[in-house]
Amino acid sequence: MFEKYAMIVIYFSILMVLGYIASKRVRNMNDFVIGGKTLSYWVAAFSAQATGESAWLLLGLTGMGAMLGFSTYWVVIGELFGVGVAWFIMAKRFKRLTDKYEAITCIDYMVGRFKSKTNVLRIVSAIVLSIFVLIYISAQIDATGSAFESFLDWDYHVGAITGFLIVAIYCIAGGFLAAAWTDMFQGAVMVLCLVLLPLVAFLTLSNSGSIIDGLIAIDPGLVTPWGAGGLTLMNASVVIGMMLIGLGFLGSPQVFARLIAIRDEGQIERGRWVAMLFTLLVDFSAISIGVLGRYIFTTQGVEPDTVLGNGSQNVLSEMVHYTFPPLLVGLYVAAVLSAIMSTVSSLLVMVAGSITHDLYAKIVNPGLTDARAAYLCRRITVVLATLALGLALIVSIVSPDRTIFWFAIFGWAGIAATFCPMMLMSLFWTRYTEKAAIASMITGFSMTMISKFVLQEMESIGPYFTALETMPPSFLSALIIGYVVTILWPDPELEVRYKRDLDSINFDVLATPNPVDAKTVTNSWTNFEKK
Image 1: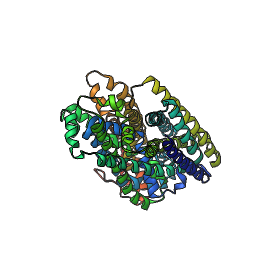
Image 2: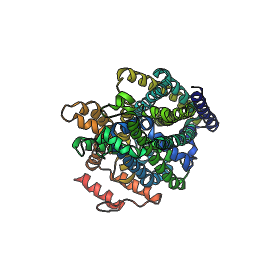
Image 3: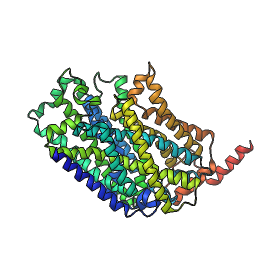
Image 4: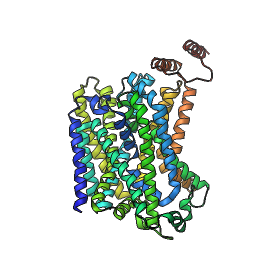
């Protein structure tokens, strides 16, 4: 046991040192929220991906791999697609525009993009972001308690509170830089541990050549791409739900904050390859851990939940204890905490910065000084962290049968459905309007709730929506509503101004079905009003 705690103490010490060093560089609000736009490609890529993966990867996705087998690898394809689109297609345009608008938050970008004359966009964005971020952070704190419980036999509540205190301290002290630097360190720990475990476990098996045969003997559905029963409507729903998890990378504020903070476009070109490789390694390895765990720890007729915990989310812990000595078990506790804390710290800094900058400084107190804003941001971080801890503890009591995978995915899907459709259309559709953006966000937010608490409870279609989870219907609804509102209530003047913004940053304006110049658009709208 001493070896486990020694490794954990070393890990926490490194986090605290990084937080202390980062705190010395925080002089104003810009430093606290985006680190002065100084991130290198390594730090930005590792930080973005570590933030996006979270506890659902190490505890949830490994458990899904044990439960479903090979069909879980669809998650890898979906995540690579989402990460690829974000870094290869969206990143440069977003970076140039945020620099042009002098944005330090994603909400700043929206206000600049839509030339907002009111505060409605800021208020709606900040409120819905805060709600789902609290849910997502709560899922991570919940996973912290479960990790301490499964690895070290701690009481769940003691573990949750301990992890919360650690991340809150370095996050409050160092702000964005502390989050980014610790993400880099924690991301490296995640990659090392995830890749090492299935490789070593595989090599130590005396009959490693018969793994597929062993899985077939346990359940033939484990080795098919569609799961047990083949290609059915239900299995297709499960696969679609898993693949579309990657949509959350297409504009979620906690991920795109790294693109605002990255040093320049050259860093984006290098960072995108790091992000893709990181995603491939950690996702593929996590699922492989689950699959190997199912082969090693279960037999035919034995439900994995009875051996590997609810949702098989203890499979990582069981595999680590099965494969490695106590010293390395401590390293894996650190890896799990890395996934959790990288996400919690990033989300806390982002939403605290949004409340301080986008609501208080821009609406309530425009004369707020930078030093005072940074001070206030730290205090808001404390409040948000405490609220998230309280929510996590309440959920642990109210829903003892919850799984970490779907608890975390609910928060992830809520943020993604609220912001990603809006972000996509705002970047690439010149006609997209502020009214449509607000409608898209409200729709994504509302449909996430409706999908989870209404559609999934319906007797006839509920099981299919449960299989899909909340992301697909919510994301699609937000896209449709955004399109409809833009068509019904166009804003030609905004379209002209956005085209000028794109021209000024040397981007080709996307072709429209009937390309027209600014004068023609304005005249057409004037004639329409006269009619």
